[in-house]
Each structure stands twice: as structure tokens, then as C-alpha cells.
Length: 277
Image (cartoon, rainbow, N blue to C red; front, side, top):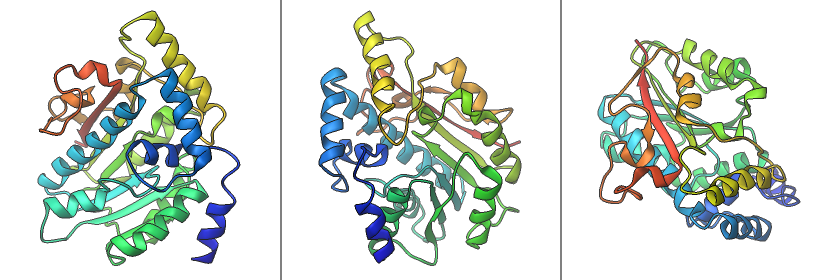
């Protein structure tokens, strides 16, 4: 635990995307440097907080659907900080028999440190664990996932990569990484993906604001890029998209709490869930 605290203390020279996300979700695991950065991007893109909440809401609805379909194993890659609506919270609420197992994976020392600190008080260590591994090193990541003993690859797994891919540039070849993970899991497994999009801006001003957002994140621990629906669809490979397909996130099984439900395209978030044949 002392090592985790030291990792947090040594991470405060730059904003952390995970902590900025936590701030916009209303969490408390963030610091002045993160809040200052959040306010900077909010001044340029006033709805950024709502976009991030939309990503988190999509995660909750997607996990709920995975649990409803009977999936009891989850690997949350790029999980960031435990905050509002964690995968294990949603899955357990959907399956009261409490038979779900979750492996949270992140490569940021600060995110992992916070995860271990917070999960220690909110999760079941026999079923929920946070590990250090890097999306960019899929073979090593998967080996570490299996080393936890939580995942039975003979049974369907829900692979969750939510609000992560906009932090992976095409030049870094996310396609082969996701392809590797898709190849590791059993038929019937599900893939949950979402990211921010620069598609259909309402004006040239908003188009520029979205471009500025990408530039701002170059100064954080997580630079990246936005994608259109067509550019994003390839990450599902040949898996079958569940209804309603790859859509703006608020259009994916909306509930009463869903932001942007009336005009989903204003959310600037796309997402979908696909099943392995």
C-alpha cells in the first residue's frame, strides 16, 4: 500500500487522463493539476463533461447487457480509476448471485495505485482484481490476466475497452492489439468498445474545438486521436454487432438517466457491443 501511495505522489507533474475523467464524473480522486486542465478544456469545449459522462453511462448499460446475457467474466482493459459505476458494481447489481469475476487492467502507475487503494475497500478480492499491464503489449497483458486465475478462457469473456481507443493513435497499430485479444477468447464472448468521435460537428467552430481537444491532450499522459464511425467499426473485426449496432452511445439501449437521449449525435461518443461467432 505504501508503494501505491508513492506512485500517486510521484504522478503529479502532468495531468492524468484517468484523473481528469474522474473529475468530470464527479469523483474525488483528482488533484489541482487535473482540475486546472479540466477547466481549460471545458472552456474550449463546454460539453466535455457531459461527453465523458456519456461514455461512463454507456459502459454501465453495456455491462448490464453482458450480464443479462449470462457473461460472468470481464476483462476491463484501460480501466482507469475506480469511480462511479464500476464494472464489478454493475455486473453484481445485475446478477444478484454475485458470480461475476472482473480483472481491471491499466498501464498507468497512478491509475493502478488508485485502483488498488479504492478496490481494497469496495470490492471482493476473491472475484475482483486490478493488475498492471499495457494494451500495447497484448501477449504480456493477456498472460498477466490469466495469471490472476480469475478468467477461464474456455468460457465466454466480456472484453471491455471503454473510452480508451481515442488515446491510441492509428500509428500505434491498435488494430493488431485488439485482434490479438479477440483471438484469445471463446466463441460467445463479447467486445465492448467506445470512443469519442469528431463526426458530424454542429459547426466549424466545434470542429476546431474537437481538434484543439486532441492538441490539449498531447500535454497529458495520454495523447490520442478521434475517429469517425467508419474508422472505428474495424475494431470489431468479423464479430457480429448486437442491436442496435455501432451507434452514438446514447442510442445504445438508453434508459431514464441517459444523457443526449433525444439527440444522440450531440454526445460525440460512439459505441457498440459485438459477439464472437
